[in-house]
Length: 117
Image: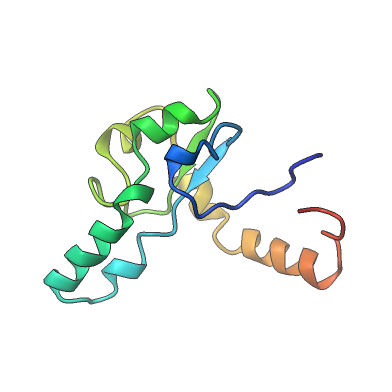
C-alpha cells in the first residue's frame, strides 16, 4: 500500500481530495461546545473553506464516502446535499468511534506504522 493514511488540513481547492475514499470532518466539535452565538458564528466562518459539500465530493473518487457521527449540522460542517445523498455514512462511523482510535493507538505503540507516511 503506497498511501496507508493521508490526513490533510488543506482546503479542497488544493486538489488533495482526488484520491480520497473517505472524507471525514472534525470541525463539528470546536464551535459547538457551549460558545455564545456570536463566537460560534465567527468559528463557523473560519471553517467555511473546510465545509464538506457537493463540490468537495466531486473532487474525490467516485466511490468516496463522507463519514460523520451524528448529529450532522446541515449547512455548517456539511451541506444538505451531502447528508441526504447516497455517499453519506453515519451509522458505520459511529460504530467505529472507539475501535478506530484504539487501533491507531495500538499501531503507534507497537511500531506497526514504521515506514508508512
